[in-house]
Structures are given as C-alpha cells and as structure tokens.
Amino acid sequence: MNEHTRREFMQTTAALSLVAATGLSTQLQAAEDTKMNTAFDYQHSPVPLPFDTKGLKGISDKLIQSHWENNYSGAVKALNLVRGQLTHALNDANTPAYVYNGLKREQLMRTGSVVLHELYFANLGGDGKASADLRTKLSASFGSFDAWEAEFRKIGLGLSGGSGWVMLGYNDKLKLLENYWLADHATAPANTTPILVMDMYEHAYQMDYGAAAAKYIDAFFTNIQWDAVNQRLTSTAKRG
Image 1: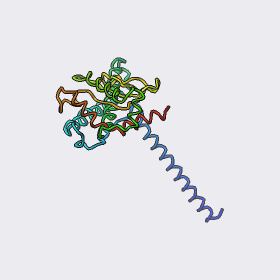
Image 2: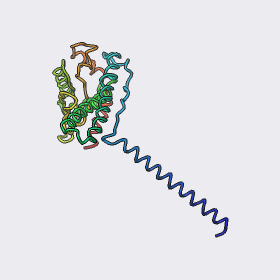
Image 3: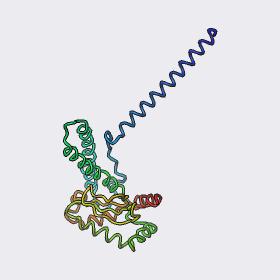
C-alpha cells in the first residue's frame, strides 16, 4: 500500500468512526429522552386555553382565568409533585404499602382533574349551536336532541351546590352513547370515551352566579364548542 492509498484509507476509517460515534450518540440521546416519558418520570405541562377568555357569553374572564390558573393548573402542579413523591416512595424499601397506595389514590384524583379540565376547556369557546348532523346523532341514541339535553341538564342540577362532573360518553364496550354522573375526578365510567363534559364543582360558577347553578348551566350550553364534540364522537365511530 503506497503512501497515498494509506492516507485515503486512514481518512475513510476516521470518517466511518465519526459516523458510527455520532449514530451511537443519537441513539443514546433518544433513549435518554424516552426515559423521561415513562410512567414514573412523566411531568405534565398546563395546556393553554383554546379560546379568548373575554369571548365567552355568561362566563366572565375573571372566573375562567381563575378556574384555569388555580384549579386546573393547581391540579397539574399537584400531579407532578405526587409523581415525584411516588418515585421516592417506590425506591424506599421502608415505605409502607398503605402509604404508597395513599399517594396512588392522590395520583388518580389529580389525573382525573387534569384530564377532565382539559376536556372541559376544549369543549368551550363555541357558539352553542349544534349542527343538524350532530343533533341527528344524539337523537339516534336519546330519542331526540331535546331529550338528551334535558337529561344532561338534570344531572348537572342534581350536582349543584357540591362537586362532580356531567359527561356525555361513548362506552366502547357496550357500544352505547349516554350521559353519566361523576361524583368526583375519579369516578369516570370504565372503557368510556368522553364526548362532552361539564364541570359542576362550585369553582366553575360560584364567582359569577353564587349558588345559582342553573344559570351557569345555561351559560355552559351557550358556549359549547360543538365542533370539538363532533370530532370526539367521530373518532369513536372510526373505532367501530
């Protein structure tokens, strides 16, 4: 091998080594990034409101901002904190099982609060007018659109003065679309996709309406983002 050939060989070998090292580095970084997305390490970030807070009718900017900042974002912070405590408790052999389960219960409640609030805010910001197609879909399950709405409202009134959620959901197991009563953040029906959710905790309306929950329910219906509702319902149909 002459000097020129030897030089080319050394340059090629060095280049291949660099490519291999870069590829390994990329793989290691990808693995590291994936590690941060595990059930133990995951940290959630608040989702911004998808509408102009001053554009809602009957729900004040002050109330919706407080709801997002204090109740929803507070739940996000609490959930992230609990996840950290769970990791510490899991790695501590002296942590009693009942203490660990207490943290898991808190995780369940905070997760429900975060998810339901994000669904709630996402189905607000509309004009409250359901399309003819969507009205037909709900009528197919409830006999009429008005019958669906009457039951949804009645469940909400029954929760007034306390806490809970009203959910229009599609049960993937039963293949059934129906309204559900949720006592708190942890009582969602099994194997059910939320289609429309209404927050009935007092923090969702007390600032604007005091104890007059019926007026809040009216305002909620005035601001429903039916496009978001239709998108959720359509996704269930695609699953069969």
